[in-house]
Length: 178
Image (tube, rainbow, N blue to C red; front, side, top):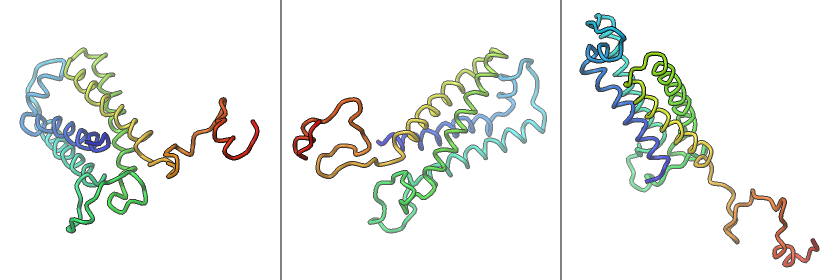
């Protein structure tokens, strides 16, 4: 599986994993994450369930907008998806990737701040999950968002330079002196 697809499905899975407790048991979350043990208010239950539904929706949108699931009815169009902006199968792949990277980075930072100030280990799990996904998302933005400029003759990347070393063999073939 491609790293890009793993990131997409990982983001959806992480958001779903966070959403399930918010939907099923908001009172348990409030009791385990607050400094004092108490019953959840009606507003906390409402906000927890709304956030759980929003997290599942955002995870599904991430998978759909990045082109991981082909949305065409023809099987011939359902080829591999790239993050290339000209790819008609996933025109929103790179913007979605960038937004989810920023989300995971902010969520990791916020969970770390809460973990260090409260000492509740539930936030530490959030730090680990969000940091992992932020690192993979950063890798995808840096290295998986372009196909590069690969030469058809040599198979080498054309964007590389000869600095500080010169390619003497290529210069000999061209008849140039180094």
